[in-house]
Image (cartoon, rainbow, N blue to C red; front, side, top):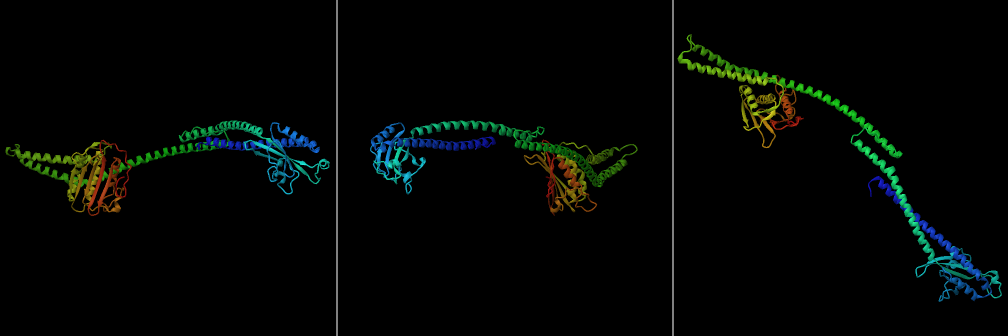
Length: 542
């Protein structure tokens, strides 16, 4: 079964035409055969009456042999198989075919038209007196029974002994050959079949032509237009004018095209406005993030101020004491020869202490310097070491020991070194503040085999984080510290910096055992897309 509409219509119409034509051909064939048989019946009836009329005078004069001779002569004509005559009792009086039975049963086929009812019929129309049948040799024959009535001239003749009450004296049975009629019917059937096939062929050609012209081609055109709409070619109008129905359908598609075009234009305008607003808000968020990072940096500097001042005070006090000792060694005539070595030792110690002060100040300036964000390959181990040197003294004053386990072959990471120093600083200070009393903070760097990230872990032996608070620790201004000891920006800044670098941050914590903050940063050879991570309920950056 075809799936396209035009072949379906063509096939359906062809089947309908074929069925209608076949029925019409069958009915016409039957009608033609019936009319030919009717003509043959009428001819046989006329011939039978003519024979009866031709022999009437002979039979009236009781010249039977002459009447039989006439019938024998007529039977020799083409198309007549035999002529028989029966009396009223069914006795065969004459037959043009020798060897016929001399007596027939009144229930026989030749007697049925009149003797089928009681009393027997006297008047029977020609259609009921005729019978068509097939002979043993296969050809068909038409037999016509013609009653021989007892007319007054016959009943009153002196040579006959038939009472006037007897209506029918006998019957004349005329049998004609239907082979010419059958040949004519067969020829007529062949001609009718050829004519019908020609008509069906012509009708099929017209069906195909008009179906393609008015159905298939408009539908294909409509499909092309709808395909153009699906390809977003919305400037081409949809116009089909083959029929009212397809024109309405094309108009509906054209209305849809116009509405879709307007909707896309509105969507594009809305998208443009949305992108502008998103870009504007993104700029605002980036500015706010920078301010937040700077605020956190200043807060970290405030926390370091006392520790750094105390750490700087120790070498300065040593320098002051050494300078006083050196002043005592120096006399009016210079440095005594015996004390030059001692003076040089003091001077070397002064140089060492001042260099120490210089390193502390340099690290502090490097941390607090507000530079333009710039990502480049950097040594994560060096960043950790530099940051630990800044906070180690403060942590030691609080009874917190710092341990470093840095991978010696750690690949370089692509980052903004100053921002990653702030991440390390905040994680270290946050770990130290989580420890009540003495404890330990451990910084670990590693790179998993086959991985594309460098891992930084900061572990502490503090109080841990309750499970119901882990999902909120990266929220700005959320803090679990006592009032006045924190504003809740440190971990929010850490999360923002790590996310901006395309990295991840995870938290594992057990109350009473401690916490581990795990930061993953892309290696220098990797170019990850900007992360859109948000912390999940476990404090993991997604």
